[in-house]
Structure formats: structure tokens, C-alpha cells
Image (cartoon, rainbow, N blue to C red):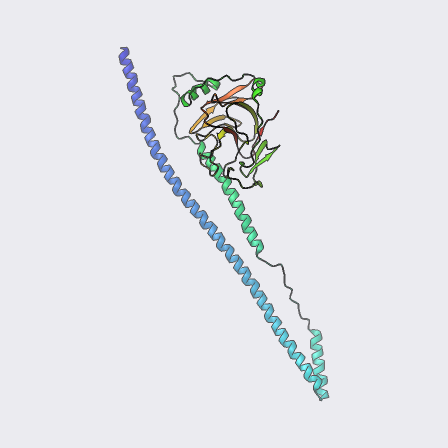
Length: 386
């Protein structure tokens, strides 16, 4: 009887798995169709935008040409009028010369009064030329338009990439019959499947963590151009306007990220970070993380070279490579980061009278790591120095 019940349970699991496989196949087909539609629609939208820009270029060319033509016609009209006035004045000058030589006194008197009256009654308008007239303001306006479009498109692309990267297509859910676990137990349980467990001795109280405190500074040569660094390069805030940074191959050119100058290797370290605003990510990365583009290879926590904890006012999520773990833990505006480089431990804590573990990564660090940050709009991070 027990064997039959076991077989029935197995068959039920087979049926459930077949059903899930069928659903996943349908979802994959829908995903492919959705991706293809998105590609086609995006291609059409970008083509429409390019045509709009081309129309703007044509309208601008028409505007310049029409104003040029109007100015030239105006100048030619003035030149023609001036030429006629010159001819008329020359004719009068010639008449006066001939009149001065005539011996007919009656003719002289009649002609003289007529010329004098005509000359005194006539006031010729003067033509004033603007020496500063130029089409330079048009070029300046188009240049500013280009700058605004570049900034806007970069901002929007970051938003789109962030939204898309947050989307989860499918994931493994824990069996319902298992006991629900949260907090530190959930961290240990989930990480067991991701990383090889390495026992470490971590402090329990803040004063114990502070024994390993290290001094960190943000590296302006790596900072995204719209990240504003202050407080001795310990605070980073995402601004709308780009900062006046020099050229650097180490700079993140498309993502609002910045690294610290100090490499951490072969020891135990601890630092604290205050964060505020819509959201920020705190983590570490190898030096070799890519700096150009929007892809996962550039994003701290989205590749094999980096680890991060994303913080918002409602949740946390730990990220490494293709894995993302949502963690339920109390909100904290100050995050403590504990790194045991030799032992392969990277842990994030909510700082307070009692240190509350948010998440722990267990990994084998192959080289030095650099503390790094991702900062969203209206948000900021500050490295705490005490």
C-alpha cells in the first residue's frame, strides 16, 4: 500500500513537471514573439525619429534659406533705390552746371527756383546696415538642441535598461511543503546553492566591526559624468548636468557608477555607507569590469566580476552574475560592508546598536576588489568616515 502511494506521488510529480514544461515552452514561444515584435517596433520607432530629425533639418534649411533670401531681396531693393537716387542727383548736378553757364536770364531764374525748391523739399532716407547680423545663433540653437537630445536619450536608455534588467522571465520557487524562511536563514539557504560555503568568523557588534575599518575615497576618473562628487570625494550624487571631468578610459560612460581608488586584497576590511533617495547599489568589483556601454558586463553585480546589494526604501536585492536574491530585512539608511578577502566572505549589515545581517556572499576572490556604487536619480551615497 505504501509503495502504491509513493508511485502515485511520483506519477503526480511527473504530470506536474510535464505541465510546467509545456507552460514553459509556450512562454518561450511567447517570449520569442514578444522580442521580435519589440525589435520590429523599436526599429520602426527609431526610423520615425530619424525621419523627424531629417524633417527638422529640412525645416531648418528652409528657415535659413528663406531668411537669407528675404535679407538679400531687402538689400537689393535698397541698392536699386540708392542707384536711382544717385542717378537723379547726378542729373540735377549736371543741370546746375549747365544752368551756371547759361546767358538766358529768364531761363536761369525759372530753372533755379524749381531746382532749389525740389532739393529743399526732398529728404533722402539713409540705409543703416547691422554689422552684427549673422546666422550664428541658429547654429548655437541647433548645437544646444543636440546636447539636450543626447542627454535625454542617455537618461531614457539608462531607465529602459534598468527596467528590462529587473524583469524576471522564470525562476525556481521553493516547494510549498517546506517551511517559509526569512532573514538570515533565507540568506544561508539560498546561498548554499550558489556558492561553496566557507566558514568565517564575523564580528557581532559594531565596535568589533570597526576594528577592521578602512579609509576609502571615490575615484573621479571612474565616475559617470553626471555623478557629482563632494565631501572630499566621499559622496556621490546623480545630477542632470554632466560634470567637468577629464577624459579617462576607466570612466563608466553610460551607467551612473563610480569605484573607489583603494584596492582591497588579502585581508579583512569594513566600511559603512549612508544612502538616500530612490535607490542605490553598494558592492565590490574586480578592476577588469567593463566601462563602456549599458550591458550586464558593465553593471556592478550583474556579472562574474562583481557583487552588489541594491537598496530601496521598500526592499533589498543581492546580485551576482545572473543571480538575484530578494531579501526581506528592515529598512536601514546606513549599510555596513564586511569583507574577508582571504576567507571569501562579503557581508552586508544594517548598521545600528545591533548589527543585522542583510545578506552574505561566499565566494573565492581571485584578485583585488574595489568598492563600487550605482546611484539613481535624486539619490546619493556617502562613505562614512569616523
